[in-house]
Amino acid sequence: DAKTTQPNSMESNEEEPVHLPCNHSTISGTDYIHWYRQLPSQGPEYVIHGLTSNVNNRMASLAIAEDRKSSTLILHRATLRDAAVYYCIPSAGGTSYGKLTFGQGTILTVHP
Amino acid sequence: GAGVSQSPSNKVTEKGKDVELRCDPISGHTALYWYRQRLGQGLEFLIYFQGNSAPDKSGLPSDRFSAERTGESVSTLTIQRTQQEDSAVYLCASSLAPGPYNEQFFGPGTRLTVL
Image (cartoon, rainbow over the protein chains, first blue to last red):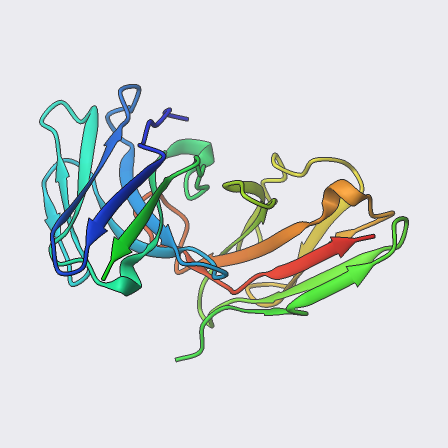
């Protein structure tokens, strides 16, 4: 499985954009990049995923570096509800496909 | 629509007892996963079911852990002779199909406390 490096924690103010970085320098060419988040006392929830191109959905945007060794999750306007642990997860194909390997993630604090 | 449900939500047991945890996946989801999350830690993969294929048990920490799934429906995770280090939140997830591009939907988890 590809290794990931994320900041332990980040802070933001409400209604400001947040850029959450992730390094995944050992990612293989067929690994998708998933982002999940876990709100306090809840199970993780899917945020977004991508392979090569930048992706947008109603929750966030995902910017993937051209060499795919890093990606950035972008929350365009943080709300208090976005306070959570954010996990960047390369998801492999082959025999391990579908299995998510969670690291420590980034704890995002949003200030009112 | 209904999401992934798990029961019980909380379980307190004594060391040495057996426990059974239940997961009801989203209807129609063929893939089902169990994870464990110890306090303050990330999730650890335990086991994966896909249809009638042999499960991927590579994450089960010991032979005290086992899991079953009936077809594409309910799954049970059984821990025999529980130990204090088994205390954790056990999370179940399902997805429409296996694959690195499919979203996993997680249940709320079962918090297991072994005294």
